[in-house]
Image (tube, rainbow, N blue to C red; front, side, top):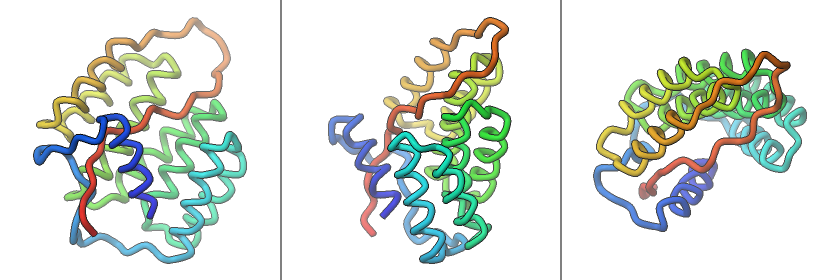
Length: 182
């Protein structure tokens, strides 16, 4: 269910056009299965973050991680919520954990985590790191011209922040994605 929400957001970004060369949600990938409790808590965590309640999102993500520490989505949700709260280093750690928990063959899942990390770095004004992360994202989505162009634009738009306290980071825009039959 969760990936369908991300796919729907991606289709809105692409105007509904899907291409065969796009990075797609995996089909029949041998990954650690999610538990019903972890899935439910991760979905609630994402909803809380999108509703402007990142503190509650982190709490739910932590519960989901305790329910199934191998599920990558709670780590992703936690990272994005921490970024909203301005806790950049914690956000980056959670997003790296999400990337590591996706199966090595799940380029789509890993690309979402890497894009979240790149966007978090960019919004925090850490442009050298952001550009490197956007480059990693472009490698994962190579062949998808729209996703690559989006990452190039965000990479180029990054501006270092003057020395000031960290400010909350907005959620990244929807990821380009295409549906996969399940």
